[in-house]
Image (cartoon, rainbow, N blue to C red; front, side, top):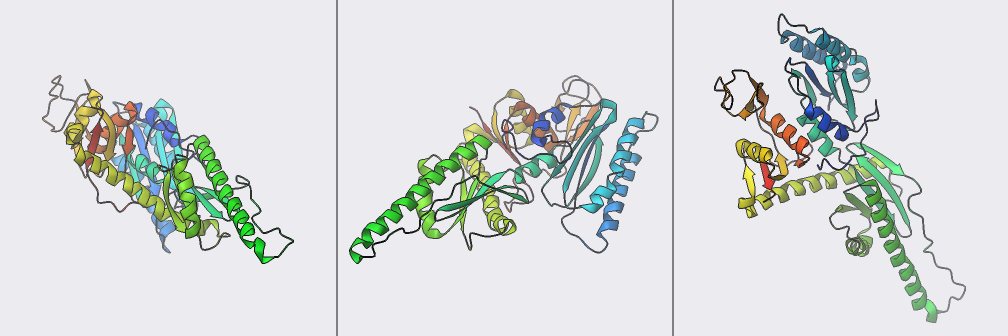
Length: 388
């Protein structure tokens, strides 16, 4: 995920792009520990699911309230938790939507995002910084891409983000490739066939060019093609000739040009997932081939992030590992040690290692690969390609 690129994915409630908000969210810090991060989505349902949703959210809020410090003004936090509690009915109506809320009424922050992703996640944390890693992973899975169905003389185009698909009408003109002859003499048949073939090739060239122009204009980075195998053999070279090789995620055999959007999504999604897995595999292959320009592990990645040497970051699962940040000087260390090794302050705050790495990478505008639940790649921890 390149933070310089803007995702077309928009929040349904306020029209903001979550990718645009990441830098702002990563900048927030609150010594009073009042920043709330709320994630909720269900991937499976049962007869008791509505009750389970309500109990789950109620339990999350109750657990958060129990952790609030005694003797401190927490009225703002209580207001935010009440507002999240009031979301239960809308969540109950559509529990599969991936919902994210970042809130702090004391700082007048309320950002709510809904992504077209169905995942099992249920968390509510109150901390010094917003928890952005689950959002990063969800955005990676929702990275928008284009699906084009191509038949002789006609094209249908779709945009896909996560589990949401929309057909784009009137984007590609049709071409008449039928025979128009009055003379049926056999001697002319090879001329007729050649003319039809020329027009078919011209249509593929024109469609390839229009695809490239449209995807460039809309900043789409991935393309999946649905067509017959014989057409793909003629179409792929045209796309490659136009510099589209890096955008092609793959193709699937088109069972019927009139396929429904859901059928198109079912065929295209596995290809997009493999595309992401290939990006991750290529990253680790590059690290192995250039060990002098790469680092692996929390400590070395954090050090190189701070020195500005990181070019691209891979953020895998980092289970239950914390880094300790000094509230006084903002330096970090892997061990608690009771005191900051830089300034001697005893005010050390435990932060999930993945969150600190993500926050520093987002603020530096570094490209981040953050695998989500949609890929089958064996999880690596964390690694970085260096600039030099």
